[in-house]
Image 1 (cartoon, rainbow, N blue to C red):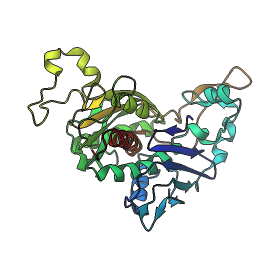
Image 2 (cartoon, rainbow, N blue to C red):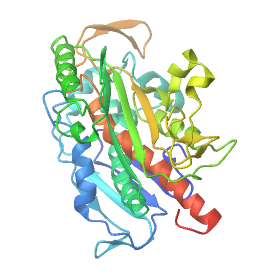
Image 3 (spheres, one colour):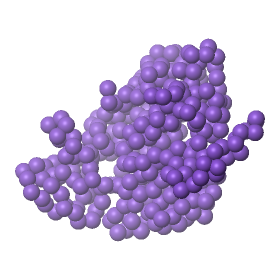
Image 4 (cartoon, one colour):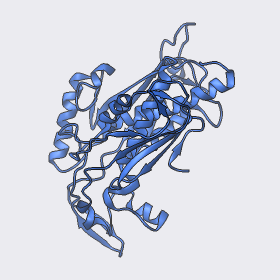
Length: 353
């Protein structure tokens, strides 16, 4: 089931970019947890389009309809279905592309996979699909909060511009969602330049989970870091994942990267909060490489269904940098994975943590 993730906290998304609606069904949400519609809406508002001049100008309210699983603001333990209707799709913008395989997009591979595809806005391969992930992530965050786990994230690189600071409270104060106020200004300038050039730019999103106790995750084939890697790579436009020290550790010695535990805390966190596939009590840190958006206004060569190539300029409303809107999605995927790990550990050991 390629649209589902999780074993105990099971999340299944549905819908296409220009269909009537997108949404999600969450099965396995523990009962008795207080959830307000505003909690879900707050997360969706962070992901929705049209937030600033640096994002797509598609105007979607992304108003969530909670159809089941809640009663008087409390989870019932039954499946929670949530729906968000598409209200500002402009399918005509894609009519000229119905017989074209756009470069960098999933058009060709979907065609080869299914023999049919929805060309409007990318269909199921669109970032619009992540609405359901974020709605589910709001539930997972609420569940994790009951055991003291919190999740924060931000854009830590755009193009060649890197953040030095990690002030997660700063991330929601700027349109780039950068935890470094000074770097945020330069990132915004870099994104604006790409937009003005009818191009796009990539970057890196970092997510951190605090309060994760030691013992979550399973060794060998179902490691916590492996589950996080799979979840992050399932987000549209992601092409790489690092845990903790990541690829930079390849240049260092073991004496530098072995995290020392003083009996109370880790003095460093090159392991990113995970040792042997199991959480070790330090913050869980994940970074995700986000490729430049594939829909750009520059003239490009594209293949056609009939064979051969043509030249296209993609019209419509698109993000010059996807990173600011990937942040809440990556946080949600972290929450979904950790919710599964928590429920698994609770079942194994018979205790909340």
